[in-house]
Amino acid sequence: MTKILMVCLGNICRSPLAEGILKSKLPKSDFIVDSAGTGNYHVGDLPDKRSIQVAEKYGLDITNQRGRQFTVLDFDNFDLIYVMDESNYQNVIKLARNQDDVDKVNFILNEIYPNQNHSVPDPYTGGIQGFENTFKMLDEACNEIAFKLKNNK
Ligand code: 4NP
Image (cartoon, rainbow, N blue to C red; front, side):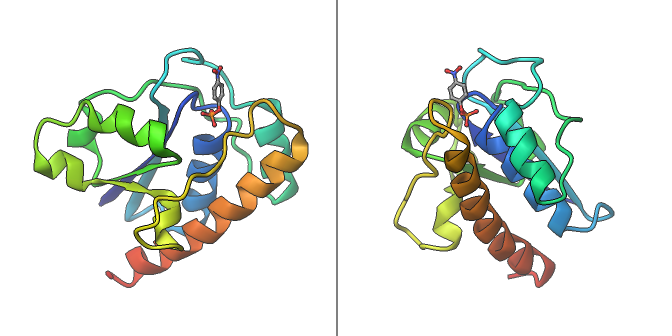
């Protein structure tokens, strides 16, 4: 079983989309996909209405998800940890206990733009178009992740 964790700040906009998208591209029998936020503002909350709406538009139901905060135990429970931006990266790395922990963490857009550490911009304060853009970026990145994982690359 390979376990993948998607991380953003609130765990209501970007990482729930990333979780839903990647889950839809991988067989449940071999992969676990989850998401978390570095902040605790939305623990227990549903994803943002706009993330739910955009996911639905593309055929994904993410309403089973609830916000939770990233903890140090996630380094033990997951093999790969994808962050959305530099601030998520710093917040996750702060909790790393050793190099193995650090090595699990990567910017999700590095899957399409290797080593560039590009951010998936936070769509929270904008309109629905931002969520559309977020979905498209994450969908592209998740295609790459799923291809690699399914082909053991
Ligand atoms: P996310 O967006 O990190 O993509 O879930 C945010 C959602 C809520 C907040 C920040 C970012 N907030 O500060 O409440």
